[in-house]
Length: 341
Image: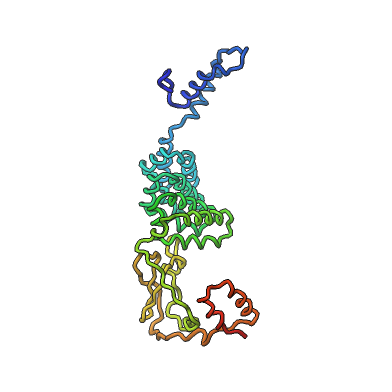
């Protein structure tokens, strides 16, 4: 375009190019009049206001986010300014190079829900089909921070899930990190929410993950499950045992924002001394549960919860017998020997 008549590469140049190349489409029989000085000044002012220096606005927004004394409203306005232009892949990469992504990650731990939601949404827009930003945020451990936001307000949870989806989309390292922080199990718990929009997004993401061929090998050091047939004697009565530890919360009982909560437990181990160890992530080592215990505690073995196999009503038994025609032959023994009243 600029090689023909030296058109400028900004909005004014585009308008000039369009005017020059659409003269033949003008209505016939019309006469052009010279634009007055006042109209020219108005048009010049309008064009100048429509042409903005995006990187300069990014720098101003970053300085507001970096200032600890900035008010919440100022930070919200700064994030809105970033959001308006961040969907452009070049601006997104430039924003990362300018160091702005650090403040987005930091604000995922903010106390204001609107700030958290905006920060998560911007991360989502930057990372969508952009491997540069995907790698940057995954390397900065952004996925675990976003996972912790899924149990907050509806707006925060929806934006955070949007960001997680963008970091996983066609990006193997993001999927590996997601699986290693037990993201699939956490995602399943989100199906219990009353937020319809969130529910639909979770189902959509689960469907997309189910289509991924690399999901089976995403977990490092994966191993096949060991299957055991459970009998009634497997279940023990722990309810009536004296309690040595009153809580299995990995953090302090009067915790503040950011401290570990009981729903972060992924695995618990009890040793012969009565000590409890936990994992907040499957790939981590076991840690001692930092909770008070009862002194001079006497360890007791639990009794069986059910002394014998439970019986069902004859009506239920008959219904199960009707299903035998659809069940493999090697499973019929279980149904044939099911006790009923």
